[in-house]
Image 1: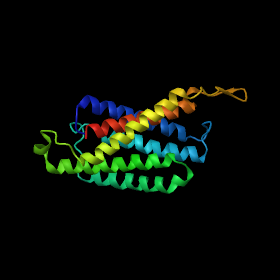
Image 2: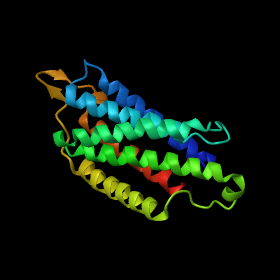
Image 3: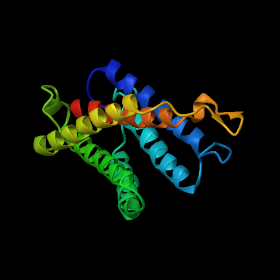
Image 4: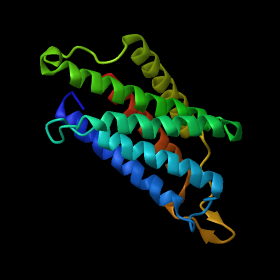
Length: 192
């Protein structure tokens, strides 16, 4: 990723941490980890880990030429899958937009890399400014709306049938994870 190395490393940590937490939510023993919730957690884990890899500074990992194509294939398939699952819940549409944004960023970064370092010395924006602006607006609105829902949501009961629910399984944590990934996506688009 181009941009300040500190921002890139913060995005790597954010993406890896949220991806790891989503992998943790996939386990069968987790409360509320039904088939649908595990499907969502798998999609979010893929997004988090993909964001972490994509955000690696170019000084650490000079991306090979095939990496953009791999990102395009993986996240293109994830976008199509999310669109097919959208009939089960509107949240899958958000996954489709996120996966589409990952494809867009991979293509834009590959084009910027093909243009060479001379074109990037003045930091000419990669990709289409109109599409980048549209995606920035989407993720900004998503973060604000989801953040308001998260803050205004009543605290879930911490005990179910006499058994305490660990904090790591709280539904608010999964929502906070989604908000943090959307903030990360916004930041990645901003430095694109």
